[in-house]
Image 1: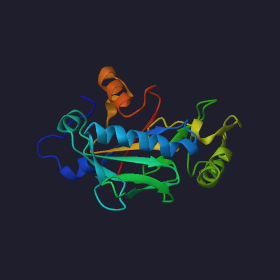
Image 2: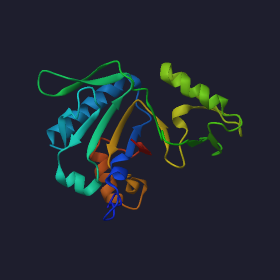
Image 3: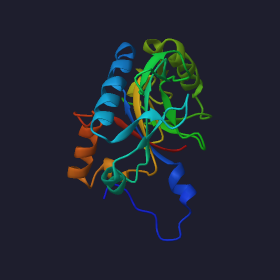
Image 4: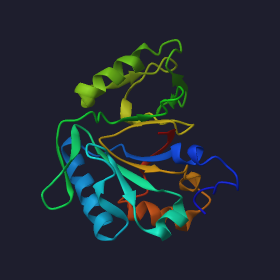
Length: 217
């Protein structure tokens, strides 16, 4: 299985808070809304998820396919596009409109995170010596993502923020992302190649290169 099912007697709240986020770190900001809309239409059309969010103004769409729930433990899905939000439409569905809080930063909000330099592989976390460049890059990303660069304190190389990867899978930036609510899908990291590939393909990650972030909603 792609996830570890909860043991009998495990608190359901713990599982409901677990989230797996797939982040496209390469897509351009201008293409993110189209990617999210395309996946929305496919998932709704295939009967995987509801056409309407759980609540007006919410980003979660309830999963309807019992087999999908059984195989993944995922009970709701959010589709994120930087600078956009979901709005109900007259056709009993939803569509993306400009505005909203989506900024393309995905991380654990209940703890810190660390990232690895793409050049020398040294790790860097907020609060570390030399992490001021990371703090500045995060601020710049929200307004001008193409200008968000981080200087590695170890090798002094400047690299684009989206190229830095998290060894603990607790951080990534990208303009399009998919949040899966209900479980930490550790199988996406390896060991369940067929199931992981099938799920990635179903979610539009045909190249299998979306970054994986584990968090709690």
